[in-house]
Length: 363
Ligand code: HEC
Image (cartoon, rainbow, N blue to C red; front, side, top):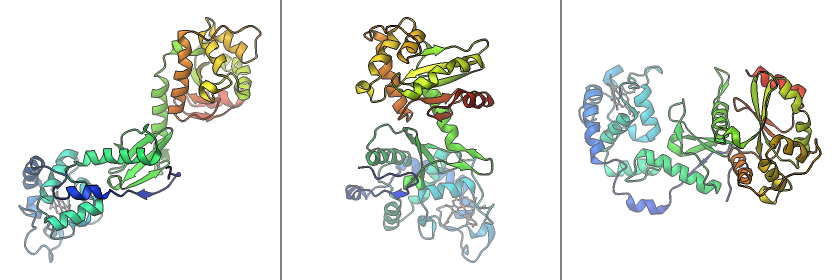
């Protein structure tokens, strides 16, 4: 069942099966013990040795107002992500007195410190927090990230989902499937699918990832497994094209690649038979990839040269399937699909007189 649309926000619910494990907590005694030492070194001056706060904290201001973290005050209303965020960033910038511990405490330290003060929470408080925040007993927070990935797999009906990694924005995790990127917020309770943009720097953070992932994916296939039309003279850049011999716009683009070569652009062809093995170009792509002279066979298959195609029965013909898989992985649905050397995608056919300046301006 697909319930996703671009930009959708949804929250996920754990099944009642997890309630049965409700007795225990996400952390173990090891984490609590290490957290206790860190807490005493870094937090106890203000929050009290057992996270019970200093007497009079409610009337005090500034540092003396540090609240209890033992479950008797407000702290348990915060999600795991919010608690870590407060400890990392503090709130001095927004007028509070809680110092930032980023740089002093690692992410692991922060989790252990939280484990320590949460070990002071009475069961009913912990259970309510765990329920509201979908924290599963006996699981560390990093396995919760895996759960989120699992859930995405289920909802998307796909297994091809990258595991979540934290972005430059604290507490926001990025994951990827096909050519789509998703952002997990609040420890994975919410997911947002779309592009993340840094307005201040006018930078599309998602596009940066997308390009570098595409570059990595394209590099999986060595040049010897491609059909390459080299630049004439010195090579200035490379254009990667996923092509199908039977597609009209692939043929049109192909008839113009001499202009690209003359402009110092090498064309690297990847095979992408639309419709896979049932597609109209599948057989002739295999012939092209089996041919001794790949360029000549490509010219013949695309109707710009005369001649006969060799048989498509050879070991290299597997490369056609490989190209199709790779294309699917990076989200290609039609041909031609063009990728510049830095991974920028151009959708469909672009006339050479527009394409050349776009590629060279990128340098
Ligand atoms: C210099 C004193 C000081 C130290 C040291 C300190 N805190 Fe705080 N903390 C505060 C104050 C004061 C607040 C209340 C927020 C405000 O000032 O707005 C606070 C708030 C918090 C909150 C939010 C509580 C809530 O109910 O919203 C958390 C969580 C927290 N501190 C955790 C820690 C941890 C963990 C450490 C040690 C790693 C630590 N603090 C060290 C002073 C301190």
